[in-house]
Length: 111
Image 1 (tube, rainbow, N blue to C red):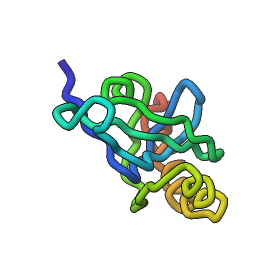
Image 2 (cartoon, rainbow, N blue to C red):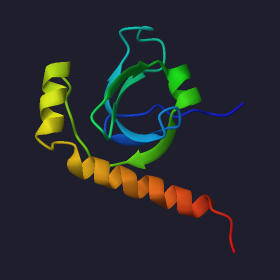
Image 3 (spheres, rainbow, N blue to C red):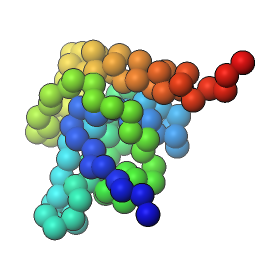
């Protein structure tokens, strides 16, 4: 059985359902409780907040790419939207796209 890693704020993921790169902007335990692995909330690079994934959903639907260097404290969705418009996530999304491209190239078949 695979060992799963908890995702953290600032980590980049690939979300195959939307064919998009995203950033984890929040982790939480208030849904499943403190005895469970934390859930995560995801912001896509086009600014869409696709909401939360409990740990098991994150394992199934999100492909971890690595840390982007983003340090962020989520307060509410209004703040999140405003921060996106102001470019708070721009460098982290750039790093996320580089991580995704690196992973894609590394898994491409050799010629």
